Image 1: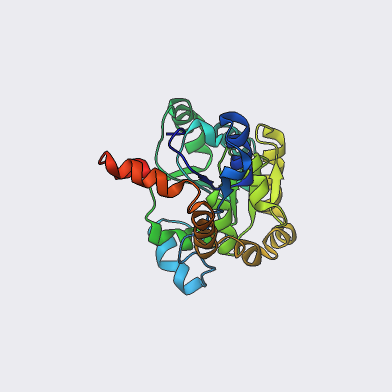
Image 2: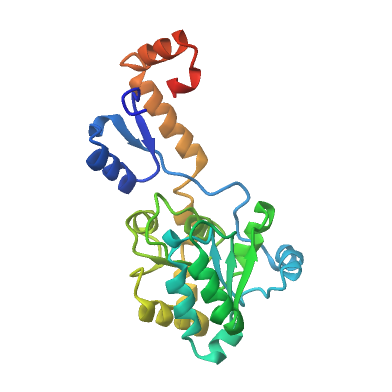
Length: 260
């Protein structure tokens, strides 16, 4: 695949650096095309929130939210342990809601959830329909995103698009995408720091409002229109350099997919 590749599109400057350093592809052949929040990701009013949250048995402003697959890379063991270490009074005010299906190698997390998390206020919703996500984001007290590694980190951007507060890890791509926002970053494996951040966002309304300040403006920097423009620019840049040759070679042997 790399031998046939004319140009590489990737979704963050962090990923771009890794591709250049690890795969040895020249920098001029790798372009960053940032992702964007999905259509419909916006701050919803109470009337729009109510039916969705009622169906999910959640109260507006009364839960912490994680969105994504439950797998080791997402570092949810650290998050669940930090949450379970909170005082019972705080956990009683704000359950930790995990929205996403079980992924690969999730046996340890599942065991932690069943042994301790469920009894201490961790709620596993499983897969949530995309149509319900704007309400789920808008109703959350904060999004918590403790990933060890991401290529971009879409849920924090979508939470900001919905006007929400974000607590996220210092994983390089996540920190890159959130740079300039008021999101609070926490070292991924620091259980105590996560516990303290969770406690503060539950108890400190002023701090939560500070985290939300400018959220939608920051999220607007990432759009599918901008991604499309960057992608089109990359195609135009390589046109006539090697793309035409690659397409012709791939078409001749009847494999259009290999042309990229």
